[in-house]
Image 1 (tube, rainbow, N blue to C red):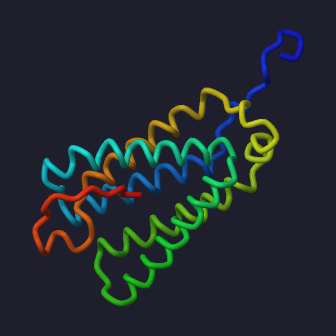
Image 2 (cartoon, one colour):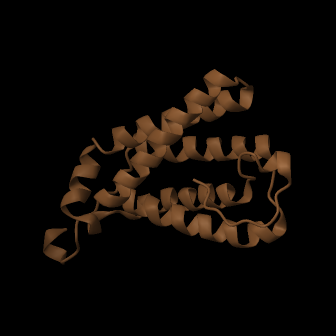
Length: 167
């Protein structure tokens, strides 16, 4: 490709990136089923805002941008830790699914940062191939579901109007 003037791309999506995406989706679906759906007023802003933020952060992680990768790592690490603590304090099937998916997502992020694709993208973020587009779409879906689910504790009080970004 060097003779054509096109930039070489990273077309092979590491398995760890797919594990991160799918475990995040399973975790959001489990949270949505366990807590329920927020009201329409809250969802009107929360769903697109959450989808946009999660998609933007995920795109940065996939392109090996360090600030967004660290941000995602801190959020996923704290989420995994708090999920495990919550499981130990008040075990339930929903908490078990949440803890397992949170830990799997965090470990998958760590594994992704150690791949050859991540290293190549650190050198040239523009080398992201089109095969990564499906992962960005998956991240946007995860964000939208996060904005649709009731926040923890809202199911006991009634939802009211709120805007939040569900990760």
